Length: 71
Image (cartoon, rainbow, N blue to C red; front, top):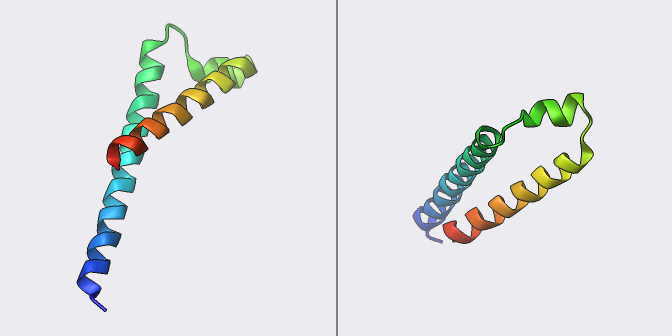
């Protein structure tokens, strides 16, 4: 068994995972900056469930796009 090949695959997986997390975080940060209101305030304090669903859908969509690009 070639351990160096396995190690390289594991290392690449870890690098891609951190890259994906960083890009997802950047997308969430960008959504917060683009909206004219505070997303945190609307969801936590005002209990805006509809906005929470929209943000969750956007996060899933961003994650799917990042996964497709990284592959």
